[in-house]
Amino acid sequence: MGIRKNQQNLTATERSNFVNALLTLKQNGRYDLFVRLHIDRANGDSDWGLRIGHRSPSFLPWHRRYLIEFEQALQEVNPSVTIPYWDWTTAGSTSTLWANDFLGPNGTSATNWRVNAGPFAQSTGQWTLTVRSDSANYLRRNFGSGGLQLPSASDVNSVLGLTTYDTSPWNSTSINSFRNYLEGFRGPNLHNRVHNWVNGTMAGFGSPNDPVFWLHHCNVDRLWSQWQAQHPGSTYLPTAGTANVVDLNEAMNPWTTTPNDMLNHSAVYTYQ
Image (cartoon, rainbow, N blue to C red; front, top):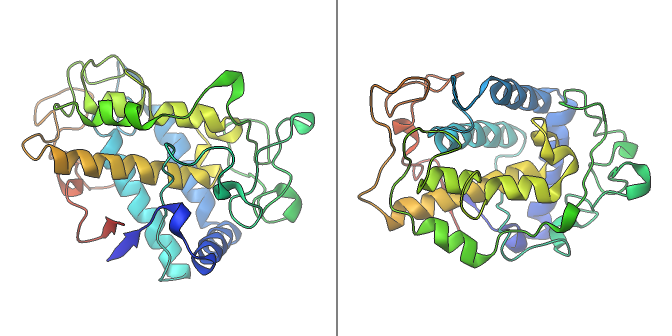
């Protein structure tokens, strides 16, 4: 069982091991398979049609399964590696998260917000975006574009205080839905806001091309885990008979895994 840590608490060795495992997956082609899976899933999800990975109740269990699969791929490279989480309420643009020996810095405006340093800069020869959702084959970031701010602790606590997992019509318009407010289409806008704050590559369906995607979604999963612990009487909704969304015991494409299978992660990983 792995322990997922706050990225701020990683040792230098843990940071290096994580980066090296990412680069190995990129080199052997497995990383791009995960990017393709996310692009295809996001393209297939719509508010008023079939929706599985986004804009739907299964947003959280789908990404939990996705993270587990990616973490297992990392562990095939180095069994000690787990995905760290990025707590956006305490780590902004000046965080060591963006150090040149970790995820690398913000992009540069003069070069279309290209990331020009760190292990994931295209100039290293190790991180060309071959599977992507836009025309740029290099990693781009533009922190806080338009004055956007990262979520605050108050924003997070207000979402954690919601007592219902999800509500009809089970899409981006759902009101008083923990899932939808965490996903970021209503309320204080958590998950979506962070994608847009990083901007560049993270703002499109090919967002897993930016390695910070995994730390971001690890934090989203951590918040769901916290909500589950705080509201033990509230569970995944809908449970059965709902068109175009994944019910509690239905499979989440492309896996046979159901949301019910993903409700308890304690046998696979815990959070520090």
